[in-house]
Length: 232
Image (cartoon, rainbow, N blue to C red; front, side):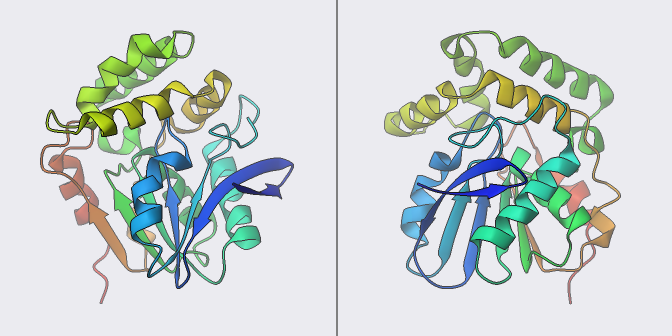
């Protein structure tokens, strides 16, 4: 695993392949290992780069008051230090929010966006009571042993048809979360609202959603699609 320093933070990452740059941003309770299949499958066509966001994996845990803007700036510094040319940026779930933070502050950096299971932030896509419920859920989990709450998450992340090896891999990655890092993630993103960013997007943007996704359902997808300008 490689690493660069950005504004005093060590940011670890994996890189594979050659070709146009594709940067992968993982979700909450995850790190770059979640992208193992994509690092393997896409490296014949792309330079695939998967970071450990600050507070995750092997990267530095930031201060508890780390903000969404701070995550966007950290990603911008990471791209300038570690990624060739203008990359395509793919954000998964919480990672899509980091991609939107990047675009808000540094729209010149991504050549295109792929937003998978994305939100306009929880507060921008979900009813207030659901935002409160999710924030309370994560906050309550941070001092629990992972084996207590991971079984609650798995049915919302994987279908019942997922191979047991995939279940085990995802469970193992989630179990390695850093409580202090997740507190920073929750502080930065728990009430994020990116509805003001979506209409400003001018780079090619692809939205990817599963029709059975229970965390970012198709109603969220349809609203995201409505707010992002059509690219011609």
